[in-house]
Amino acid sequence: MRFGRKKDVDPEVGAAAVAEEDSAATPAVGPFDVSEIDPEATYIDLGSLLVQPPEGLDLRLQVDEESGTVITALLVAEEGVLEVRAFASARGGDLWSEARREIAADTARRGGTATEQEGSFGPELFCQVPVTGPNGESLTQPSRVIGHTGPRWFLRATLAGRPALDAEYAAPFEHALRTLAVRRGSEAMPPGEALPLRMPPQATRLDHEDPAGAGPLGDPAE
Image 1 (cartoon, rainbow, N blue to C red):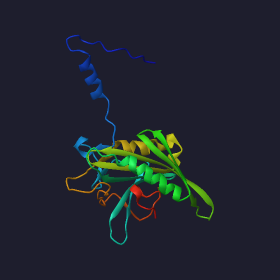
Image 2: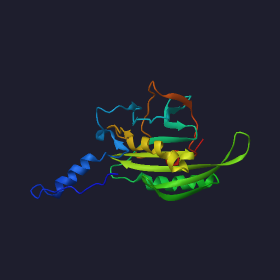
Image 3: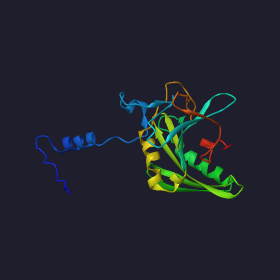
Image 4: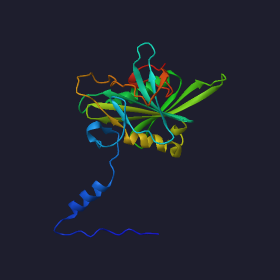
């Protein structure tokens, strides 16, 4: 077993330089703005989202059949899914506070519950919504709804299924969220408007559905 020892601080250099060295050695944690990522890093480019799916998670996209518009990106495992969508936001805005109220109200309308809790990414909602199973049985769909505010953008991520309840099972989904980057673009957009996604060759097309159980930013779920 190894035991660490304190670093010796050269009085001519000072503690600030050691702190800077420690900061440089610690990897940054996202979600990131596209301006913050290593330009040499490998990502799957979805337009407004750049993702690095961990091993064991499949990248899929929901697409509106009529318009062909990509609606949301999904990272899927056998017992859970991470849904991510990015939206335009005003500089210094706080869409997440507003979105939490809207999501809680929508969940209540659907007969479910939404409880605010402190999660790995800050304040989040733990939602439970009644659903009908494949054989007509009554089930409860659990989800964790996570929000993150960046420069002129807002990211909403929903963990549904087992990763909403099992921290160990959620680990690769959270890792994907910590490495994800958002490309806002320079065009003017009203706060709350979804940033456009596009279909890359690596993604699997899905029809429009709502596996996470709640529509983003007040949009009603299908």
